[in-house]
Amino acid sequence: MKSITLIALLALGLSCRESPNLEGITLEVSLVEVFCDQAILKIEDPTYYHLGESANGEENVFYTMLTCDDMGIQMEGVFLVKLVAEYEPGDCVVCLGLLAYDGDKRYNAVRIYEDEN
Image (cartoon, rainbow, N blue to C red; front, side, top):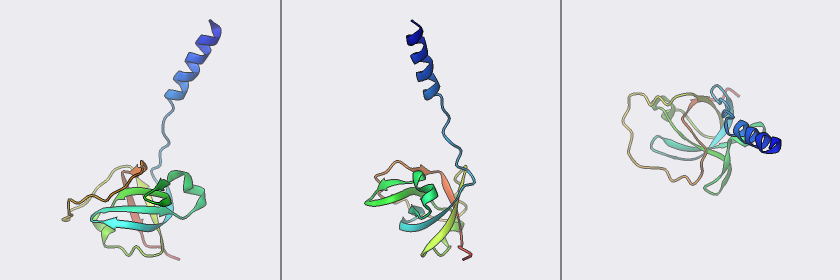
């Protein structure tokens, strides 16, 4: 009886774990693909590879939505993004097309900053 209670408590504890809060994490990324206000970004820093996944034929990637401000920023080479809690698109016109992404890692929003290096 004690072993059943222990197994039940262990299962309950594992199912109640909170997912980590990713807000505020800054990542070095490169652009894999962009369409309208959507992008697939590749994580370039091995420390954060666990935040990405294998999808669309690429490794260490995730899907995100770009804000109006982000769409005007140069996205060649390696640049910095900051994960934020909520997606705030801004006030601009975007198309309604969808970027094909076969992965599960979809973060609400990223804020793109120009790389200062």
